[in-house]
Image: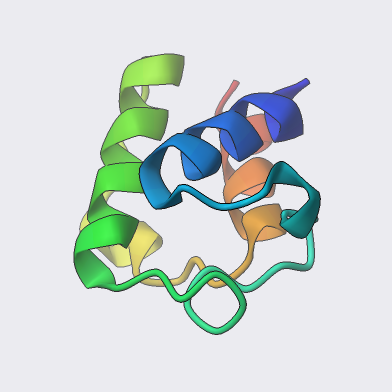
Length: 75
């Protein structure tokens, strides 16, 4: 469920095909997200789940799975 919501956020922010997004998908390399895109995705996840993601944690995210695991650990 969390994966599906995060996929929807990424699709909305990056205008990519949902089929391209898997847990192992790298946001920067595979989806060509830039740092601004990454910030917008993080903000959207924070809004969706009512959590705050510190910058130090956000800098560690590389894959979609990293985002999912982080949200799961905070939910």
